Image 1 (cartoon, helix red, strand yellow):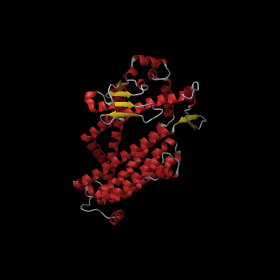
Image 2 (cartoon, rainbow, N blue to C red):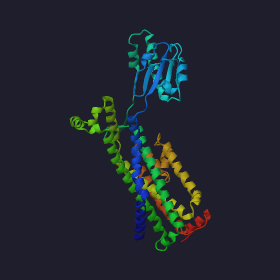
Image 3 (cartoon, one colour):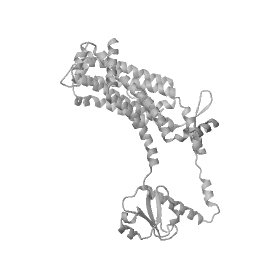
Image 4 (cartoon, rainbow, N blue to C red):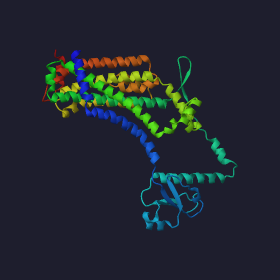
Length: 442
């Protein structure tokens, strides 16, 4: 144990002191928050206003178009052909909207001409205005009093709420979409962390083997201690980075909220917060949007995040230990990066199968595919993340964890036998027969 703890400390300190570790620890939260904040920044900046000349031969439609931040509409003083010959710089416009006759009689009698390819938003905006106006004209042609109000009142938007019966007889509001989003996020995080950290284990073993450092290390400690120390040390590096990412991301989100939503934290907003049952955000929200926020908070409060966090941590640790032991063995068996592909392919196929099995289990978390893949140790860290938000029975969670950690122990025992021989072998890739023979060595 002293040897293992020394190796763990060495592996951990070597990696956390690297500049790449510090850069990625700081850069990833900035990129994550930046990607979320970018649409808000771009929306505030806005774009250039496009000038559109309206050549309406009917004289009926031009009055419908009003200027806004995106479009400026002017009366066409010239014909379409004259604008085309003038060019963009001389005409001072971006496009010409030509309406040749009554669109109810000929819906094709309208076109937009531009000096270059126009964004789809131009056509969508104009089409929406004309469509609404023509629809109103057609309804008026029926001569039915209040027909617009009748049609508006006849539209029914129905939302079927879902509830979960609690053990105490209460009803809890739930959302399948929210559960799916949470499960997808947890599955992707585990997939990326396992692949990244397990790959670091393999790269570390292979690098020390190529540099002949392994020969010196094996002379002072057992190969098993080396493998376990490297696996645990690099795993702690990943956990450290994950915690730092969480703390920095939370801090950056708070800073971003003050930067973009500073008015919500003004003294006036705080006074409103004290006078209301919710938050000061109500002052900047209408009744419908405020109800949506309340509904979302109710749905979130119905999710057992404590259980999700514990299970996420346990399955992440188990999946990492299992795959990193396999990757460490692969790194010990080869002598160059090119040789790893032969042994990596089966492992990658299993990982990708687990990924697609998890994705396919989202709409049927209680189906046969979801159940069995959440029990198979090589796919359970991914598939169980999809099932957890859907109230998996405790016995299934414990059975899956037991199989996962039991398989890790078995793979570690087998891997250690291969590792102790392969780590000192150079110059060739071992065959399957040789690997089996290594396991039988005493």
